[in-house]
Every structure is written in C-alpha cells, then in structure tokens.
Image 1 (tube, rainbow, N blue to C red):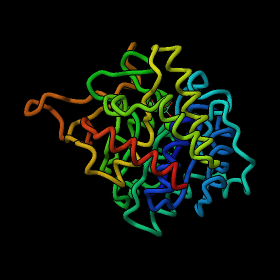
Image 2 (cartoon, rainbow, N blue to C red):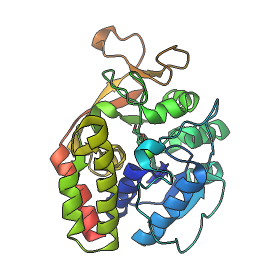
Image 3 (cartoon, protein in one colour):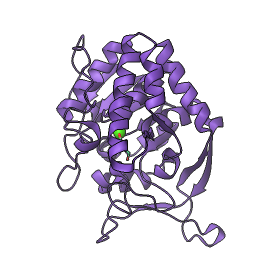
Length: 303
Ligand code: BDR
Ligand code: CA
C-alpha cells in the first residue's frame, strides 16, 4: 500500500492503522488540511514515531486549478491539533511524489494506492503515466460522498472540493476505484471515551492518539454538541486490509466541476438499472463500525 495524505488528525490515525495492518511501502504528501510543509513534516514525524521503514515523498503544494482550501479549523494550524510529535529522525526522501508514484508502481505492480487527501498527486501521476491506472490493484480513496452528504458545502466533501479537477481525472482514469465517502465515514465515530482509553496505554503512540482524539472531540463538541467525530481516513486503509468489514456497490460517479452550488460534489448515480453510464467505482455504503474501531485501538495499543 502507498498512502497519499495530508496529515491531518485523521490522516495520522490512518497511518497508525496502516503501520499495524498494512504492508506499507511508502507515503506521499499533498497540501490539504494544512500547507504542504506541515503535512510533510507530520508524515516524517509519524514515520519516526512508528518506526516505519518507508519512504516519504513530498508532492503538490496546491490544486490543479484555483486557490488552495485548507481545513485548519478542524486540524489546527500545523495539522495535528495541539499534539506536538518529536522531531523526525530524517526529512522527506524527495520533493517529487509524482515521480515516486510512477516509478514505484512500475517496479512493483499490484500496489493499492490509498489517497486520503486532495487528489492532486494522483492526478498528476496519472497525467504523467496513464498506465498507472492499470498497474495498481486499486485506488481506494477517502473522499467524496454518496447520498448527498457534504461537509465543506452542502454538496461537497473536503478532499474532492479541494481539487475537483484532480478528483475528476481519478474518477475517469479506468482504475479499479473504491470510494469511502462521508456517507460511510460518518458511521465510524471516535471521541472522548477512546481518548481516555488511549491515555491509559502509557506509550508515545497512545499519548499521541489520545491528544488527537481530544482535539477532535473539542471541535465536534463545539460544532455539533457531540463528544465524538467521524474518523474518515482510517476507513480507506482498513477497506484494503479488512474488506470483509465493508459493503460496496458498483456505481457511476462523476465529479461536478461547474456547479454554482455543487462544485466538487461526487454525483453518484443511484438509479440502478436506469443509470445512464457504466459503473466506474465501488462505493462503500455499509461498515462494521465497532470492528473498525477495535482495529484502530489495537493498532494504537500494539504500536
Ligand atoms: C477528509 O477531509 C480532511 O479534512 C480529512 O483528513 C479527511 O481526509 C474528510 O472530508
Ligand atoms: Ca485527509
């Protein structure tokens, strides 16, 4: 698995889950929740803390078109809430995530690409080498949404909204695509109870996870008056490592590029036999949330 990410509170959780459950080959970073310098520094810090023997490559510092959207109000100024991880043992292996994606998928066919940030790096890699779409086992992404659930707007999810042209390219790439959208990730919630449990572990990863969850809980308490929040990004990792926990349906998905109110929306054709286009994506609808949360907690305990 290669993770393409913008850590990011829940991206950090995804990397923690991948360290335990996936055969992680590399991490690429993209601007998203916070600027690229922070997402890359956070990926390097997580690599060190988790003792991961993987490369980290920095990628795009902005979308294909338009201005960068950040989500600092959700993830804090530097991306990991108020968690300060120790300095990493080394910096990124390169500033060319696109070349890394192209070359690594050439030297090792059958990798799962797991994008959990804006899709800029993946789109640029597909543009550089369209054959990548058929060399990867899947592109299993957290982004978009079915059933009309948005977060950045009524229609759009953050990762798709932050670079709709890139998302459009990925959805039209012909790759075996799986979408873990908001309709799915909103079913998997962690918060104060899990933070308290992590605090009792007494390890650097336990403390970091507790801090991430506490920050996340404070945000969701203020926004929605609930003491937990959806842990989006680990769902994409675990959909690869534990597919039996998810139910997916083949759908035609298109990315809205021009809508006055719907730019960045993933329009999922739910018309069944009346759908006008061939399915291009497996869309996740169902999840065993308790099992997913148990796997995340086990990853934290055993890190
Ligand atoms: C997605 O947007 C980001 O803020 C999260 O890290 C996640 O990848 C959820 O919409
Ligand atoms: Ca993310």
